[in-house]
Every structure is written in structure tokens, then in C-alpha cells.
Length: 86
Image 1 (cartoon, helix red, strand yellow):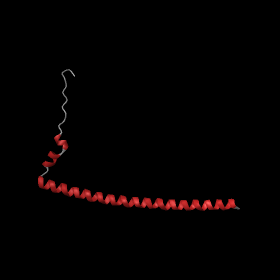
Image 2: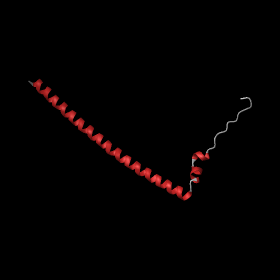
Image 3: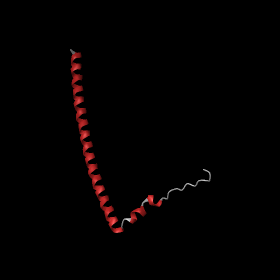
Image 4: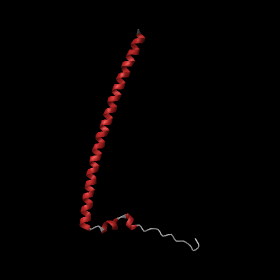
């Protein structure tokens, strides 16, 4: 009789653990989706702000400054000096 009680008791505990685990897992997933949505909204705002700032700078300074300010514009391609006969 006592053995049967423990079997039923542990089965009930296992069901409770499964239910709690599922509830916690769902809550974590929902919170992750909320945070992801907020991050995506913030990214869109920053991208819009950058586009507006870029457009304003291009309008005020002209497009030529952007090429001069670019790190790629400052770097010169490396010239490879070959000795005769190579």
C-alpha cells in the first residue's frame, strides 16, 4: 500500500514538474520575442536616423567629401616592385 502511494505521488510530482517547465519555457520564449521586436524597432529607428543624417550631410557638403573622408580613399594600393627577370 505504501509503495503504491509513493508511485502515485511521484507521478503527480512529475506531471507538476512537466507543467511548470512548459509554462516557464513558454514565458521565456515570449519574452525573447518581445525583446527581439523591441530591438528590431530600435534598429529601424537608428537606420532611419542615420539615413536622415547622411542625406543632410550630403546636401550640405556635397557628395565629394564622403569619398575624401572614407578610409578606403586614403589608402593607396600597394605597388609591387618586381625585379627584372621575375
